[in-house]
Image 1 (spheres, rainbow, N blue to C red):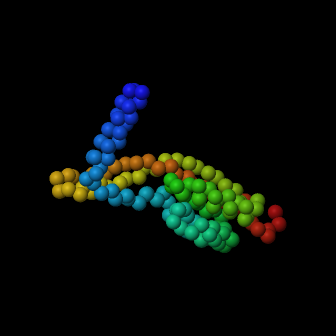
Image 2: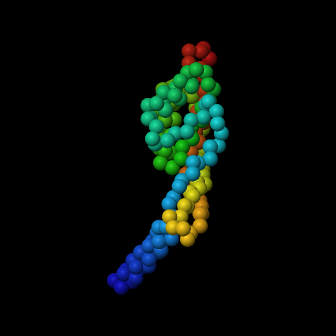
Image 3: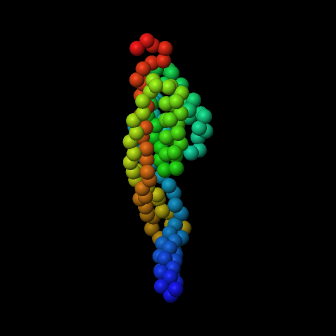
Length: 143
């Protein structure tokens, strides 16, 4: 019982010490670095309407785009996977999916709230997914 109290106090002191060092700073999150740009590259976010993202992808594929690339970070990974699976269902057998996962370094700027402190930055890591959807056969063609 005494050991539980000691370990609980140690964990509390570590957490409060970490919060104390960042208490005097305001966090400003920088935008993540975009790997590539183009008409067929779509960055999936949690804020954008899912139906709008799905319609945009469908329009690109029906206009004759050979491939589209979906990028998702952090909490948007599930939405990115769902979008790719919905496209696979809609284009039933004419599209294939290639998935790559990874980690992206994100940078936060620390702006001091007190004049005595210096500006700083902090690097954190976030999971990422890159899904390539490419056409294997065109709809309506005899192959």
